[in-house]
Each structure stands twice: as C-alpha cells, then as structure tokens.
Amino acid sequence: MGAVKPENGNDPPFWEQPLDRLSDAEWEALCDGCGQCCTHKLEDADTGEIYPTDVSCRLLDTCTARCMDYPNRKRHVPDCLQLTRETAGTLPWLPDSCAYRLRAHGKPLPEWHYLVCGAREAVKRAGVSVAGRVISEDEAGPIEEHALIEGFTLVQAPDEDEDE
Image (cartoon, rainbow, N blue to C red; front, top):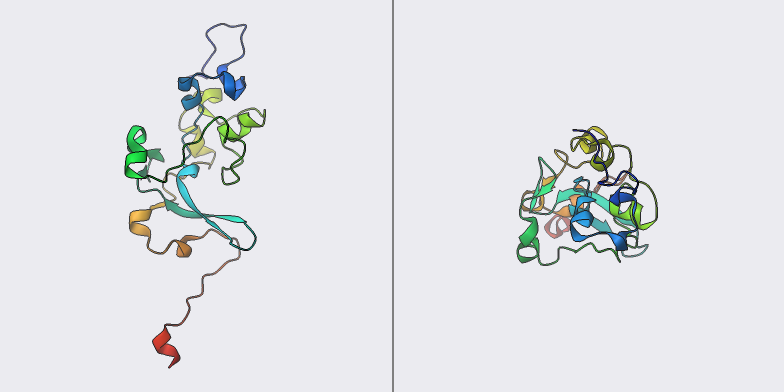
C-alpha cells in the first residue's frame, strides 16, 4: 500500500490542513495508532512533571496498541479523555510524535506516519508504538512500580510491623 493521496492532485492532503478544517473522519484518521495516549502517566505533585509508565488502559490491546472498544470506551472507562481539536496542542502528556499535537502546532507528520508512507506497521518499525511493550492496568499491580523514569529505582518502604 502506498501513501494516501489527496483526491484532487492540486489540493494538499487533508493531514496538512488546519485541524479545524478536518471532517470527523479525517480527524480520526490522523491517529497513528501508537497507543501512547492510552498509557497511564504519573505526575509529580511538587513539580508537575509527568512521567510515563508501561501500564495501559484496560481497553488497549497490548499486542496491537489499538482500543478494543473505541466507540464505547467512555462507557467502560469513564475518565477516558476525549482528545479534541481544541485540546490537541495543550495536553503536555501527549508524546512529541503525536500527529494531533504536531498538527495543532502546524508541524508536518513524521515520515513513518501511515498517511505519509502508506504502511500501518511503520509506527512499530519506528519504535513509537507501545504494542508489546505495555501491560494492562488489570494485571499491573501498583502503578508506581511501572514508572519509566531514567535513573529511578523504586525502593519499597518497610512495613510498619518491621519497624517494631
């Protein structure tokens, strides 16, 4: 499959248009399917810094990085955040590679994005997808144990009984 081409050869492809000009179908098509937005993040209460984890939403298929019930996700996960044209450029936890974030800031899609290269698997080859690299929140245990902080090692606090 080759890169997706615009219907009219003179018009730029829809993914190069401002977000507010996209149809709902075009908006949905921007998603590269990396699954990074569906992983849990930890926020430092003092600094506001956000740290990624390798824990995904229970609806994320950890092998494909695709939502298993996207149309009904809010019913199963009420706090699932709906990404909108208005919020795409304002959410600090979206990865720098996110097509929504890039386009909100007027930047081009990366060469590995399926709309550019025509291959859905390119997101995995580029190392951007969480497929096969995350664990479901239903299996993870304490999320703090899954923080992906360079140089950080979790130290377990002693049980209260051990102090006595």
